[in-house]
Image 1: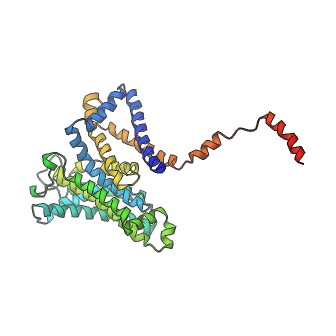
Image 2: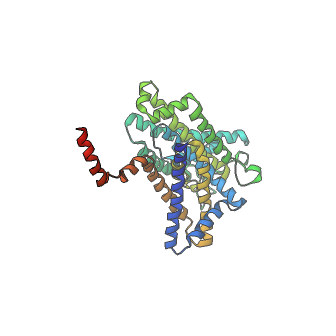
Image 3: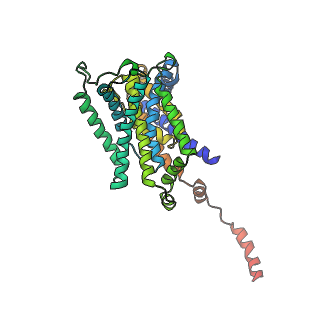
Length: 367
């Protein structure tokens, strides 16, 4: 119970401290911090319109956070979800243009599958470089994300560009029958449900299946995994593939539910924000859901901060950056033995001189 409370308390403390430091920064800009905090939460959760915007942004955050969480459970720190997302969106739009697909749910499933496959292959490449070439996966996945964005821009502005897109280069739009609609007529699309189901399903897989347990063993104790004969490389690449598939699916959903085509708006930083969401959730797929909703709300509140208080729309990125630094710092605090630290800081007091003098005759009598 105490361990679970500690697991919950440190991320909450990091988020609260980030909000406090963010308030100090805006105070230097001449803005009332209390008003900033109130506006932030009002823009995220104040009314149904705010909730719709929040949940719409939370959908890709869940999937890109899984791109970090699943490899992390296998012992890898992969931060290239942005590259998998944009390639997933590009693959979905390219398939719809290159192949005549049915304009119904089957066509939607095909473009989503194409996006997931593209993302999976991209992140598996980072895992392969780590396992077979010894290249650090954190660096390689980040650099691969920049390569993916370069490929995306080249194809969207070149071979795959719709000639009708003059001011904003984009691919051809998906057929109306393949688009993902809103839930019950709201602006919250079914991608949010896909994200929640993916988080819950993969959380169950890690907890309740033999393969999920094997992945956790490989990530928690590679030596033990080697001794019991687990196929570590295959499990690591599988975890990378699943994580990349989630990020690629996020790109496909953004194309099919929000943009209708692949364009520069797809490069919105969801892959990088997913890193923060995963770390705060402790790489727990189930915990990713509420954290993604929280940070989706912060992103949704950016425009309200700009309209009401004159702060830049990107000021929420500063909040996210502070939160990321503090959550990394909290990882160090998690390993501190506070009881031992307390004993060192407050040692037991020495015996008083009177007690020492009284004990001396008794010692002599014993001798």
